[in-house]
Each structure stands twice: as C-alpha cells, then as structure tokens.
Amino acid sequence: MSLSLKNLTFIIVTFKSEHIIHKCINSLPEKSKIIIIENSSDKKFKEDLEKKYPNIKVIIEENKGMGSGNNLGIKICKTDYAFIINPDVEFENNAIQRIIDFSNEKSDYSILAPISDDIDYPNYKVKNKDSINNKLDYINVDSVDGFAMLIDKRKFDNDIYFDENFFLYLENEDLCLRKKKEKQNIYILKTAKINHLGGKSPSIIYENEIEYSRNWHWMWSKFYFNKKHYGYVNSFLKIFPTLVSSQFKYIYYFIIFKKHEKKIYKMRFLGIINAILGKKSWYRPKI
Image 1 (cartoon, rainbow, N blue to C red):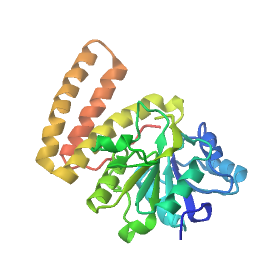
Image 2 (image 1 turned 120 degrees about the vertical axis):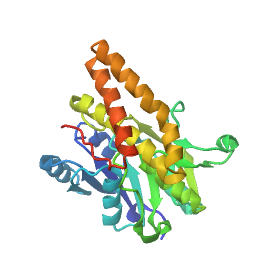
Image 3 (image 1 turned 30 degrees about the horizontal axis):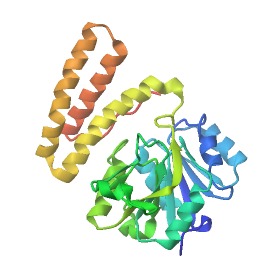
Image 4 (image 1 turned 180 degrees about the horizontal axis):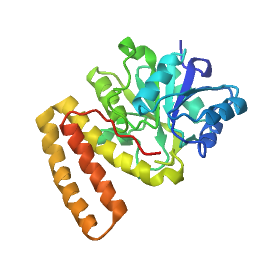
C-alpha cells in the first residue's frame, strides 16, 4: 500500500514537553494519526492532549529513552509507515503532502526525511558531496537526524528498529548505518522543509539537569556506537582525548568555583567511564 495519511502514523516521544507540543501537532495535517509516548508519569498531560485532539493517543511510559519510546510507538501503530518526529519541530506548509507525493513516485527507500530550513545545520550526513548539489528533488544520504524521519516498516525485518541500548543520542545514526549496510536507500527531500528548534523539548525549568544528562549520554553513546560498529580498541582510541580533557576541565572549573561547568565535565567523564566499563546507559535526569 502506498503512502497516504490513512497509511501513516506520526510518533512523537515527549518528556515534559507540554510547553511546545501544540505547535508541532498543529503543523501536521488535521486528520493525522498521532501516537505520543510520554516518558514521565504526567497523566494530566495525557488527559489534556487526548481531550483536545481526538486523533491523538498518548501512552504514559517509563523513561527508557528515545529509541525505546520510538520503538513502542512504531510497534503499536497499525500503518505501514511511521513518521518519527520530535516535539520541537514544525513542518512548513505542504511539506507532508510533498513527502507523500514523492514517496508515491519513488518508493525505493527505507528512510525518508524532510530537509531542515537551517542551512547552517543540515539534518543529514553524506560522504558524496556532489550529490548535495544535484538537480534532483532529493539527496541519497548516509544518515539523517532523528528529529524527523519517515520509516517504511515493510523494509525492516522482524520489527527491528532502534537499538534500545542507546538512551539518548546516536540511535538514529546506528539505525541509518545498519540500513546502509543492507544496501537500502535513505533520502532527504529538498522540497519538504521542517523547522527544528533543537533541544527545546523539555521545559526550560529543567534546563540544568537536562544539560547534565545530555553530556553524560552523549559521551556514553559515542563510545557505545563506535564500539558496536568499529570495535572496542578503535572506540577507546577515539574517546581517550575527550576523557583526558574532561578531567582537566573538571579540575580547572573546580579551582575557579564554576559549579555548573564543573558538573558538565564531571558528567562527560562519568559517561565515558561507564561506557568503557560496559555499563548500561543508566543515568536519568533528576527531575
């Protein structure tokens, strides 16, 4: 069955995102099927959204991370296509329809994504730079950012999507790399634009704790990703300079009494150490 609104479900993983989710929802077509995975115990969030939007189903879930939340939404939805989006994104007018039209003309992809409207921060990676300036409406890329990615579920064997060992960061890179190894296409559609606020999903009142969590998990995920795909030694050699620098910066900020900065580099160091020791991505923000 080809892509259409009837055969498409939007999956949004949230974490205390009530301040921003409505702009995201309102940028989607009115009759869209939407599943929201709320990674907290906020029942009021669920009640308010389901009352306001009859096309939305909200699931309250233990906070197991982005990949786990996305997997749950993908497996629950009954459609062939699942559109993974973050709550801090907005689609430009006609972006969804352009994606649908393109997909029905060229469906040989496992992952398709709109293009970020911020040209300074592209939402994709590609080794063949010549393909970026082609005259086609799309780019065949190596990976896309996880804040907006359309998945054709039929191209995934045994319902294996995101690696749930990642709590935060690089789960999308891992998924894309696995699909490229399977010789499957990943496209960016240049005619469909999206705006991503970036890191604005949780409320600003949790800013410091979220920042500490991000630093811990970014380091953990970098080591785990490289270990998974390129081996332990390769991963250790890549992360070692950051391990050393985080120690020195922690000491420096300790000496000059910069509490916030000191905590950031402590979290980076601990994220690396836990990954090196083979421990799971266990850290959670204290919210």
